[in-house]
Picture 1 (cartoon, rainbow, N blue to C red):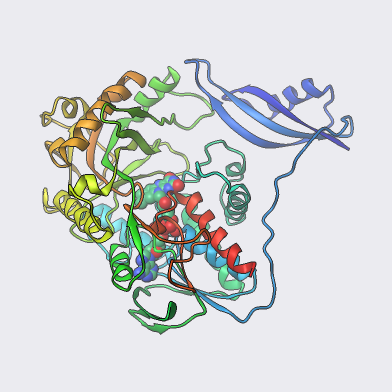
Picture 2: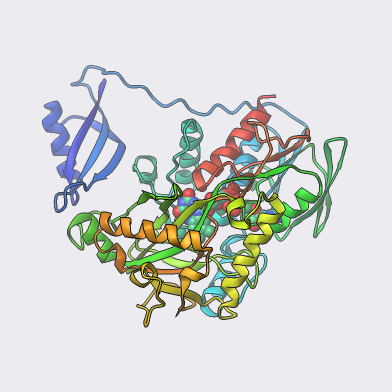
Length: 510
Ligand SMILES: Cc1cc2nc3c(=O)[nH]c(=O)nc-3n(C[C@H](O)[C@H](O)[C@H](O)COP(=O)(O)OP(=O)(O)OC[C@H]3O[C@@H](n4cnc5c(N)ncnc54)[C@H](O)[C@@H]3O)c2cc1C
């Protein structure tokens, strides 16, 4: 039996038969099996988009060509009597816990929120009438910020291919569509994520793991660089190793850690707004047609260099998705985007943000605690706008002219928009840089200027970063690790989960 790697181009609405025929033509035989290795849409030419598909074709009519199979993650199992507590059940927390369990550790996960079922109910109430739950919202609860997300599984991080492959395989085993293994821009959607997160938890429990919901880490006790106790709302806990994976929305946890001597520094991040368009407008701008058979919805990723040198870019674009109220704390208002697997909503949205450093926002060299306070105030000011989760909004055309809009179009945001001088609600240099970017984006993507800017986008990544070694160990502590987005070293589901895997692999190799 031989095999070769092939690349074929197919129309967007191709059928399985059409793909088989195309392979048969290339290898001169109908007797073969195949596996898709990569699939990406090439829509550079308007009205002429096609799928570019890389395949591994296996047939006894073929001589073996070169094929390098990806290096799998080898988890070193041995009997160990060490206990680990992982704080947070988001992608970073879950995957660090799961790897450690497979390596033979006794692992507990503690999570301040509830299971996906109860979290879903809380989110339904928030979306319906603005009822906020401290433990269960778009940031907190089982599966972390990743559960009610857009579920894009892309990552720009390098050097995580084995970790990424492991994570995607586990997602598929837990119910995610198999295509995430080969799509160039894999997307799983909130509907699938809710199933995947529960199935992953069940596997972890079947393997002997312990999971404590509604259990919030409130304080730590350490002696001579060794963490001896975790103080939770439910009582005290002890373990040999502690892995924090609390995400970057848990400002209360950050503050507690800083006050207990865990070292953080400030870092670049980004702030801005969400922009929403009718999806058909984006399809038209990207593809030249409103509908493309065989493709769900058009995506975009735009960036621009500005005169000031600050980067402006779109972030976390959600085709066919909706804008959601994603604050982690009551009386604060921020927005983010999510979607379902079908991506068939009427709208698309994306963060439209400016890269900044905390010192630029506070106006002086600031400490990690100061930037957290500054961000809190900004998020509060967006809530105070209407004393509710109604978000201030501006048509992009008006924002660019620094004018409040006379009317607003319909929107996917569940709690309503209100006209505002949105450009005045963020620092002047941020809105001015955004305006420069918006003008450039409107040149690059036809119709972009017809979007509506809304709310505050402030959680692209953390404004602070732990001082840690490459395995995630906090400086000055021998048994405290911090992984994922809260550590300030990752952004997104895959890079955060991979950070958890790397930390767990390093601990397991000792
Ligand atoms: C609406 C939305 C859409 C998104 N869409 C995408 C997307 O499409 N693709 C993508 O790659 N990324 C997306 N993201 C970002 C992504 O969700 C995060 O990057 C990722 O979840 C970070 O993983 P994490 O494990 O580091 O932290 P988190 O997912 O934030 O998890 C942290 C967990 O810790 C828990 N916790 C916090 N403090 C404590 C405490 N003191 N005690 C106990 N538990 C605690 C929290 O409840 C939470 O469950 C989105 C985020 C949001 C909010």
